[in-house]
Image (cartoon, rainbow, N blue to C red; front, side, top):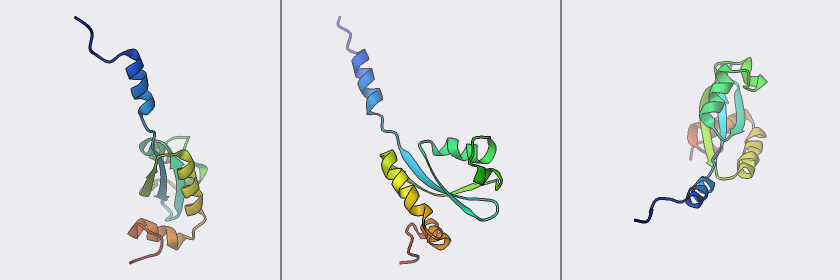
Length: 107
């Protein structure tokens, strides 16, 4: 009887088809300030911000932080572009994004 399971080349193809997601996120720090970042593992990064030495210096001194908003992207390039865009915004525009899902307030 011939083996009908996946071949090693099938497994290699499956591994390469896994899409890595990239996240842009906004954290609210204990002092009420907002932090914008980018990662490919949002759960791990939130733990780092809150409890490890790998969190950003800005958030280390403002713990605990809470995840308030995130967006998902297929490419790191798109995620970094969005992160840079949001970082340039004033606080109120970021708060609108968190509250309403868009930066221009209620619609």
